[in-house]
Image 1 (cartoon, protein in one colour):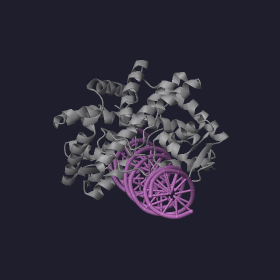
Image 2 (tube, rainbow over the protein chains, first blue to last red; image 1 turned 120 degrees about the vertical axis):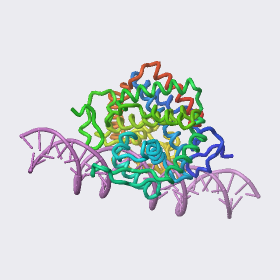
Image 3 (cartoon, rainbow over the protein chains, first blue to last red; image 1 turned 180 degrees about the vertical axis):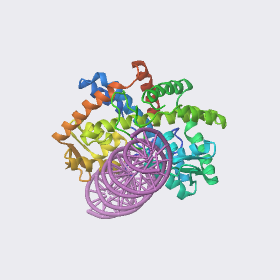
Image 4 (tube, rainbow over the protein chains, first blue to last red; image 1 turned 30 degrees about the horizontal axis):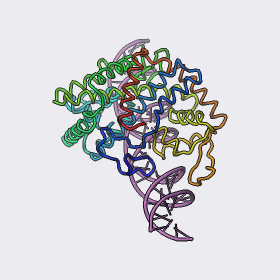
Length: 187
Length: 187
DNA sequence: TTCGAACGATTTGATGTCATACTTTCGGGT
DNA sequence: ACCCGAAAGTATGACATCAAATCGTTCGAA
């Protein structure tokens, strides 16, 4: 009974878990283990920060894996889904690539790459900027809007509505993360 | 006055910020913006989850960028640094690749890749398993221990000790993330 | 008016992650 | 004793990200 998939010849993922882990659970918390090592080495004052960074990384890995799995049938990745949603929320359904990069906080080359793929899929098309010839616009197409909506339904259903946290926990988390982002200059 | 670097021809990063952002700050919080859109579209019950996932992703991006920047002079990435630390904490300074993958929660192919590079750098060497000929061990070398320690000093100094959160916030964050990880089957 | 600096986008190359397939080895059940 | 399924590691290919270099365009200052 594979229960939950382990890496190396991972049996097909088990549906049903709120957020399924693609790997075999460890018999202990690796973050706590690392924190203990940090303290043993005399780095107490950095241990909590290290644990925080490690925790964030793990949770992000978990969520990313879950999201990519849900979007895979649509031939979308989270990066491309985010780009489509950004366009669909925009006033005219199109934005300069530079604006996309600023909003999604990713490298210009990543935007070019994502738009290339979305364009090949027919979900987006490049247009000329009316006044600035340096600038190119990415415009969402009807199929693009359709698939973005489909992806949103699936993500809402299978991920966003199933975060295993209470409202208070979500709010507390949100406040703290907001602090970090603001302090880092995100907005 | 570049103040803070923007993408596209980013001037050299400004030292001094606790955690420097590599991009120009936005005039608003993109996560709040997205939440508003979610609510406007009638997805209230998924809005908080969506905001949580987006926040986590952003914070992880920020931390990852900061960490990679600190480790770059050592020709290390966070992934390879984590692998070295795992080995340095292990009893004999060596572990089977499969154990490494389980502990770091990454794909076997990623472990092979990282060990390949670390071996090329002389920070790790592959050894045969004493009894199981399928298994290979990754063993940390003296230069490997040295560079891992150096990286730890830098990360403690420039990242882990500078998380812009109070002890209470760190603990609250830790508790909540622990819940998510545990629920997802991380341990 | 012109010229150089800055900007927008793309290309190229390095790195990392995952999925899939394959090889070798191990080990349990008959 | 043998066999077949599972495990460990690797190769390959797809995708994403960033850095650095490049090309065309824009704009402001001399």
